[in-house]
Length: 129
Image (cartoon, rainbow, N blue to C red; front, side):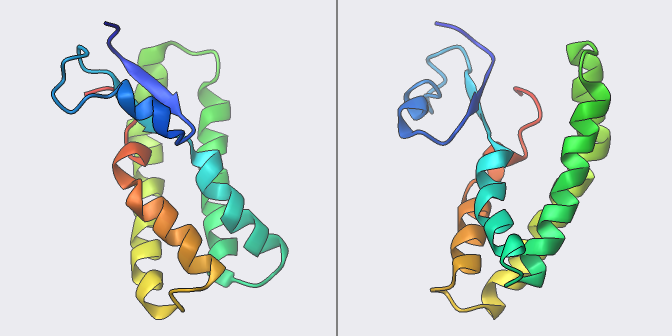
């Protein structure tokens, strides 16, 4: 079986690759930030949520970090993600967890926040452990 990481769109079939018993030599899933961004971006464009706008702006920093390390060695990319991206991600989760209890549970914002928060482990995965 292969080992390493798989950048996943959240499609449930990928879960079979990442067996909890580690019987697959440790394949780990890494979440797709673009999927998390999509619903928040729609709220931002509609100007219906300041939290969505703040999220989209902070996520732009993640894309800037990736642009800066594109073409560099895997070790250099991992280091940049751990040094710079990890702090941005921590701030996003803090914002989302602070916001979620204050918005209607049926709102589009709450739906988007729950999606991201429920996938925290895979969104914080910057390399296989």
